[in-house]
Amino acid sequence: MAATGLRFRPGTVFPSRATSPSTQPYHHCSPQRMHAAKGRCRLKAKSSNGRPQISASSSSSSFRDVVIDGGPSEDGAPEQGGATVSITVVGASGDLAKKKIFPALFALFYEDCLPEHFTVFGYARSKMSDEELRNMISLTLTCRIDQRENCSDKMEQFLKRCFYQSGQYNLEEGFSELDRKLKEKEAGKLPNRLFYLSIPPNIFVDVVRSASRTASSSSGWTRFIVEKPFGRDSESSGELTRSLKQYLDEEQIFRIDHYLGKELVENLSVLRFSNLVFEPLWSRNYIRNVQLIFSEDFGTEGRGGYFDNYGIIRDIMQNHLLQILALFAMETPVSLAAEDIRNEKVKVLRSMRKLRLDDVVVGQYKGHSKGGKSYPAYVDDPTVPSGSITPTFAAAAVFIDNARWDGVPFLMKAGKALHTRRAEIRVQFRRVPGNLYRRNIGTDLDKATNELVLRVQPDEAIYLKINNKVPGLGMRLDSSELNLLYSERYRREIPDAYERLLLDAMEGERRLFIRSDELDAAWAIFTPVLRELEERRVAPELYPYGSRGPVGAHYLAANYNVRWGDISSDT
Ligand SMILES: NC(=O)C1=CN([C@@H]2O[C@H](COP(=O)(O)OP(=O)(O)OC[C@H]3O[C@@H](n4cnc5c(N)ncnc54)[C@H](OP(=O)(O)O)[C@@H]3O)[C@@H](O)[C@H]2O)C=CC1
Ligand SMILES: O=C1O[C@H](COP(=O)(O)O)[C@@H](O)[C@H](O)[C@H]1O
Image (cartoon, rainbow, N blue to C red; front, side):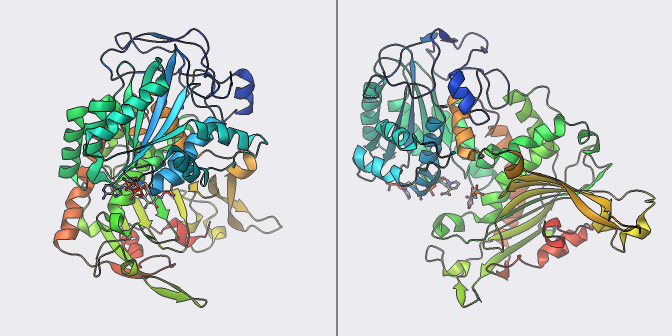
């Protein structure tokens, strides 16, 4: 019997749906594995929020207690008894599946984070054999995780567990056939099924309808990870939620925002709530402004068909940046339980002012030549309609009308085809009142205020800019950094966001997924301005590919006496 995946300890019990959430683990790392995987995989009985794992909350009506035992047979097919998880990647032939989802599943397997009994299925319309799927997947799997020498064996073991089913998205036949094959692999074990909808949004509902009717688990849980975009505005998002809920309970829907799975975003609450030095400063009393910055140094590159229908505000701001903002600004949750955290996030979102057109700047990249190389304009992308005015850049000032944040501008900036790839949170503190050293600081007092930066990517880091005496006999101050650079402090590679989120979905941990009322509140902030931008056909300010974006973003910040931290310094 191959003992590859995470061991389910004999006797581990899944609770019935009727019982209160159990603290029993969903899976365990063996002690040796746990040691090897320390810091990457969940330690025993802990979910990613560090709480004892609530196991297997189910949407199935006939969920029942189950004892985990046994292991897989030699060909990887699970033996009788125990439970199994089948993960079906719908849209398996697509970009996200190849780039992120299969590699994340392999990384979890490699780190012994998947349950002992699991099967991966790819589903799409493209015709492919199991072998062809495996070949396709194998091109994007990497042994990036500390290059242990058994990586190619692990890859082989993983690929043996991968299968493919071709079918239409809106017809039940393909999913019935999938159901038949899943049952075969499940071999009488308690079947838990996870569907990852890695498909364009216009077919989400078709897939959920067909898959939930014909390929739901008969006795275990069935969950659907839904990729963004969740609609284009309040109305379409509400419509999507209503449609999904015709077939699924809210607890079966895992709306993914992969930024919530990023290490530094995950660390935001730890930084705030477990360090006395930060939380007391976390309010309008000490914070002058907060900046949420996303930039990419490449354009739409073939994704223009999707992007043009959404634009950067929907693609990045309304979800990734707003989710970070909510975590940043929320009050202390009652506990680390998913619902307690999501309740606090909703409160923040509902306290936010609707964004006004005056507080938004939009831009679009134009072609540019540099060093003999030419870079295309957004409208040069063959998948973009000519004359498109869809923004590829936006800056916005948003406000939270509550006691903690009254009057503090939260500035967001997101753009494609800029000079660098970066995502960060910048917190600019107020000036020191009656600063004794103002004469030694120089003329620019703003530059001398403290700034806390959480660099989400690349080169994850947290650093605090402080004023420091330049060594010497004189008294000159400069701005220096207390720097926690992850690559120096932690040798281990940081897991990809999709790894954390997939694992959480399998464990039924919803904390990092978006609840429907959060989504409603998020759309309520952006829908009016999105509508106005479109109705008025507001022309984006053009900026050269590879530049720092439109100057309008500086005027917007200046309206609130703010300077973008990523521009005024290069750190
Ligand atoms: N790619 C990325 O980096 C990111 C993507 N996402 C989201 O993830 C989801 C998947 O993205 P991605 O993989 O890029 O998408 P793709 O365009 O690559 O589509 C995935 C698969 O869906 C099928 N498909 C594509 N277009 C249609 C259509 N019009 N009708 C029916 N089926 C279609 C194709 O499979 P087949 O023809 O074989 O059926 C395709 O391989 C989307 O919701 C996207 O917004 C989110 C974040 C990042
Ligand atoms: O959701 C999206 O995110 C990616 C950026 O993700 P990252 O993890 O590479 O920073 C972005 O390119 C894409 O347009 C958007 O849909």
